[in-house]
Amino acid sequence: MVTTTIEVKPYLAAYMYVRYQANVIQEFNAIKLTSTENLYHVIKNLTVKRPRNVSWRETGNLTIVIPDPRYGKDPETYNYLGHDSIICIEGEIEIMLKVELHSLMLKNKFQKGIMYKKSLLWFMETYHIEDKYEDALMKAFQRWKKKRVE
Image (tube, rainbow, N blue to C red):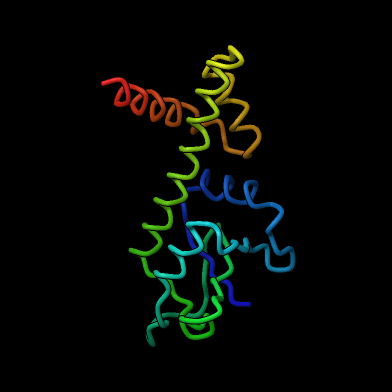
């Protein structure tokens, strides 16, 4: 098993650790994705051979297990994610978060009568997202909702 550590936005790292808490390998504090996850395939496609001039020392707030497919890239060799790859992964995680959050907010509003703000606060508490991201997430939801109506 090969792991890598990347730096993503703090609220995305918190979201991932709670979302995949059943798949966290405790001794490495690493998230192991299943092959049915889209993110698994994104990471698999983005891994490359580690450049010679890049240190093996990794820093960041999200540790993930490099996919080990039955055929294709060997994670022992292809275990490096460059800056552009990390940006792609961060974007995928953000999309996952927003899809889950927006569907929860709409479902709670129209099926249970729960206000958007309460749904957002419950989501943030569940996924251990800091309060300072509340406005950004609410504004993103409102922009998305406005685009859907137009």
